[in-house]
Length: 207
Image 1: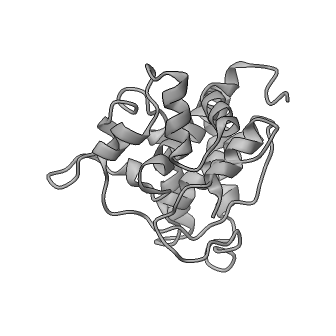
Image 2: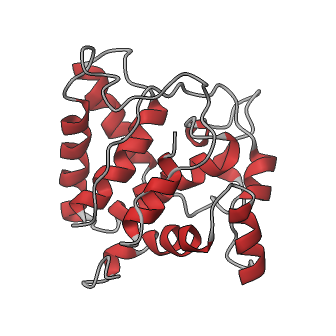
Image 3: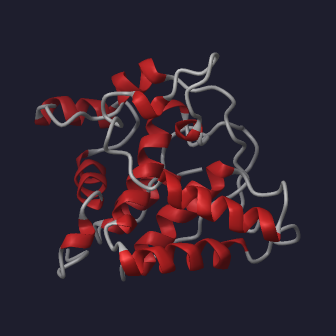
């Protein structure tokens, strides 16, 4: 149940994750959740990301950020993927996400590939979690076992996204407070913030 803290720690060579935040279900998560229903899900996700990252290496960092921005709002429930409708005020239009949330098309590609192999089986929330971990490994970073079995949220919360997600103009103290509210510390702040752009450096993950 510690997906967000795990990514933070791994990306910085100090820990491993994007985890520590609440999930959309109280059910016990398990890395082998899809062992019988979609055993190749990790390979499918990895292949799509690998193919995309050859043309756009920056996408690896963007997919980590995508999972981070999902989990910070109302748990790791893929609510960030919900588009604006008559009944949904999309988190994609929140200030910290507007014009900066890259990778939605890639997530759609992954979902299409997974659905072709395992229809109506793998949640979008788990796809985001797997994408973050696999992006780390494809960038020659650490890997970790991703707990699986999340359920997708049916609602979005743009107000909470504006409140909880770090903004470009936040001060250091404001950033620390935002992360502390999610049970994350300064190490997690540095790791997850750096993960946005880790593709730019050949010195990736140096401790």
